[in-house]
Image (tube, rainbow, N blue to C red; front, side):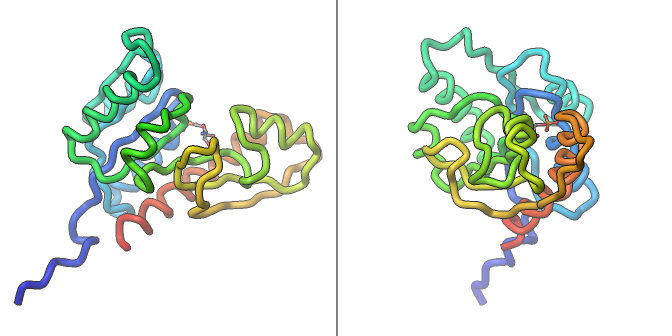
Length: 198
Ligand code: GRF
């Protein structure tokens, strides 16, 4: 019998790109460690030297690459440097976790349907960098978070999953973002688990 083993017996090799605090990254690491999420986090790439995500990755013993945008002429060359690390590590999926750079079309094409992102609103509402503030200012009563595939449209790719929550009368941007973060830490590992086991 020449039967391939079921996919979920082999952890899915992933790269995580993060610019900030790294709480989603940490949630994914913990989900991988507990066995809930069968992924093999091969590297963490950051564009910010002082990103806490970088230090977290070092603490977890995950390979890190800090790539400084200042060292590259343009976005295409910067993204090509990221792509080289990702390809060298044979990663099959790229997970954006608070990555604050817009990806070049070249990069998105190269990894078509293999890049996912988490966004702190119920897309397609409130795209962009200030989604939590924008939802509060608009006065919507329900918001949440979304995991989606990345395509050429900013925050516009196919939706893989969402979690919704009420906005409370006394919410501030900070209190709301804290609750959204908690939801993100459930949603991202759940979607990754689905992708890694399908
Ligand atoms: C999250 O709210 C995510 O939705 C957005 O950036 C934030 C990253 O938070 N894309 P963290 O760095 O994972 O804590």
